[in-house]
Length: 164
Image (tube, rainbow, N blue to C red):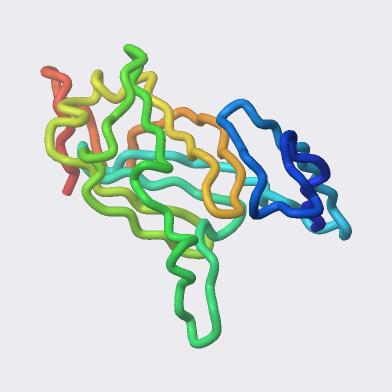
């Protein structure tokens, strides 16, 4: 990738340190790719499900973090709650501070939500999960969240009950 600053208004190229810049000056910048590598890795989400009112998981086509040698994770590639968008059926977005924990593995993500985000099965109906672009990962389009039918069933009041 090549990044070039071509022109800056009010810049004296013979003596740039003495140029008088103002808030109205404009820089012309060009960016060009020099290789075929992706600028952002494409992210595809699938199989989003709640196994309890506080446990959400979804699969990803790529690992949403960058691994370094000796299985360390590159710190600036970490997947934080601010990069996760959980939208309820009424259009409200679950605030990042209601996302208690995120665990990323090579094929998916496990999310622990605060109590009360989804109080019952009806509260989760129509909800979606998506990812925002971060580090070198593109946005993951919203997908519907389903209740894990094998783990939970709905009682007559709409509450989720774990099956034994």
